[in-house]
Image 1 (tube, rainbow, N blue to C red):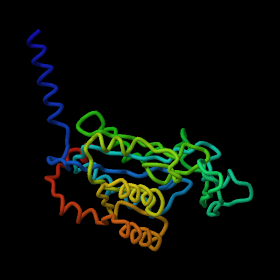
Image 2 (tube, rainbow, N blue to C red):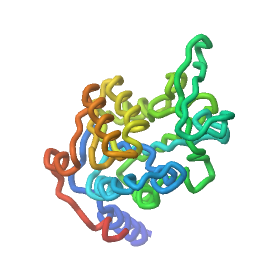
Image 3 (cartoon, rainbow, N blue to C red):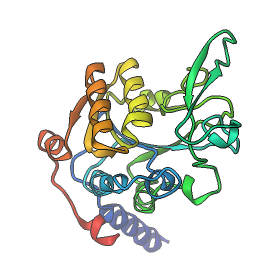
Image 4 (cartoon, rainbow, N blue to C red):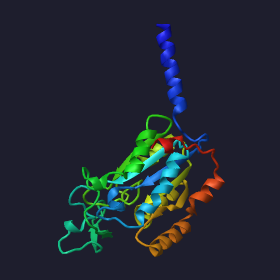
Length: 260
């Protein structure tokens, strides 16, 4: 009995020791992965620029240890308000006026796009390399929270914190508070929409927000530059991954990357 218990204990210690996390935790800091989904990379709303962020995102997952990671996903029902197919006579790229849910006298402009990120489709899934890494990290030393947003037919949600009308909030802020998070490292797609909305809401809620410039993309360099300029005006700090790592050094461990 004692021998069996000792064997199990040794096996558990060995398993924990083998988990290839970086040797230094980024305390009070969360990594946010915004909408790194197939449809935004090479699906219905894909861009040839999108896949360029993946090596940087992989590095942040492979070479750093986080107390909390949040991965958001657009999770639209069929007929969602952001789909051009839901509005007669419109084409992707058009805009429509929609009424606020809580104030029938108030309207907002809603961009409409090709159908995307519908639950149960390949396009809604997180990109395979990111998904594999998150699954590997779950259950060890990192809490991973998946935020499935924009599920209401009648209102869109660019931010991982709330819908565009602040009609309904996700669990993200409460989870960050529970884990003692003060700083958000933001990555993902696309810079001028969901990355923008999440970053601005992070500032509004009192977090330090750092956008990793080469871990976010959109449809063009010009659109990205304009979005970054706006975010800097909100107080978001924008850094390359190299500069951020230089300011936040860790002794990198590559075992995990080799195993993948």
